[in-house]
Image (cartoon, rainbow, N blue to C red):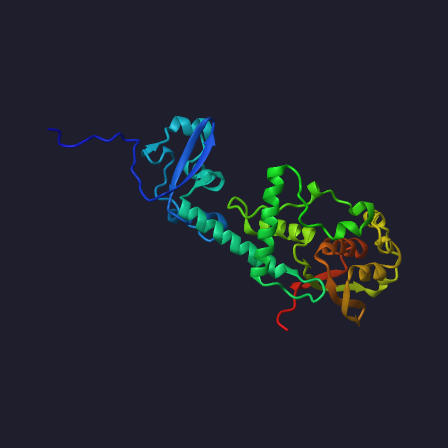
Length: 311
């Protein structure tokens, strides 16, 4: 009777793991990680690799305990690539294999984060008040159902009509198929990027009246520059209703970006205005200030999203 069973040297048995897989050079490589640690690593919460990996080895098949031969690793990642670099590439770029419960919990986390971000960035256009997360969630569910129908049918059913497309002339006539579609959250994208997609869809389709919360800015400019003629901007001169932005003085152009002025003062040799600006105009304002003042003017963000809460 044999004293023991000799296990092949390239087999390591592991249990209760999360797998990360990466296919390269026609081979599938895997690493064994602790549950929930991969997402923490990718989000930057966990920075210690030892707390992520169950074992610092690369496998062909973790469930069978089959480690990857050196020849396969050299062919796929390069002969001089350290094992630690290979592990990091798999960890950062590979596909995370999770169970049904983990997948559901992860999806719920991302969904809640997306809803929270959207609820903090969108307001009711007239009152400028925020919506509850429940109302935002209901509106996104409506868009998700609509988006699923559009993907199934190959064309829009039109349960909601974008309000701005009717008022912007021929430049605003956007076909339904070109409108942003929301089909729900996924775990493969960050919550921030998905929140931006959700906001675009909500603003386009208006299942509830929404608009981006305005930014509160402080703009400073030397008074010697204010009365100079501003250079016309080609982009703005082509947009209906914005032709005035391409005319007048530097001061006129700056104020054309400001939707509502809170205060306006002369501070020494500088002119300063505090006001509210639509997020979509922020980039253009910053570029204009930087170009016209040659770095002498400033745009300071006082509040990224101004909202009204309560009564």
